[in-house]
Image 1 (cartoon, rainbow over the protein chains, first blue to last red):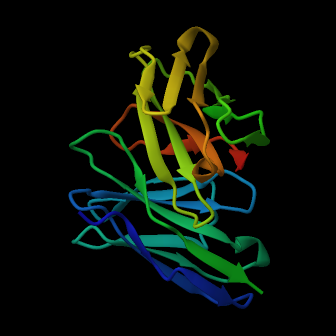
Image 2: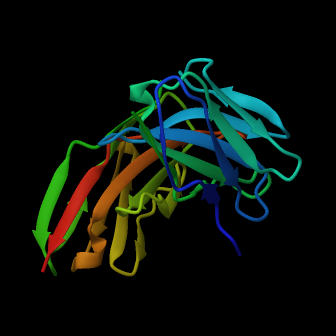
Length: 113
Length: 115
């Protein structure tokens, strides 16, 4: 049973560029959430997708956008990258029909230079 | 608004010592979930436990045990006979008990277990 998988694992981008991160949820899960974790901090909620729609959004600017596909996989897009966007981006998946346990992937380490 | 406080930034112990990680939370919800996650250097958040707010029974799983006290809004985590492999950052988190729930995390406690 595959867990939550994310790609890429590491990437380096330049200020002003755009980045796309990808996530496949755990088998049987239909809800995907994205979190940003800055160094030395706890993860912060970005947004959540269910049935291909954004259901909840945290306190992040519109430069952060996402998408969920029919197979429940998801993408996180960040435009006009800032140095402060450097962080670990974690994808989490859960099921609306089998409890509220939330599982995380290994994350994508983004460095903006 | 929900809030999770992990007052211990870093704890260092010697192998085989017992260690307790503290977690205090704030919420206006009457029903909620509490979680503990372990984050090794690789970055992945490893799920350890989920506790419902209406279930105050303590839980033990091997060397791990959790003490949930609703009266003090605390959900503490104890590792008995710690091992070097327990070294990681541990996060306590809180979520609402609703369909589209999200997690509010504490800042984490780094546990260093030395041989």
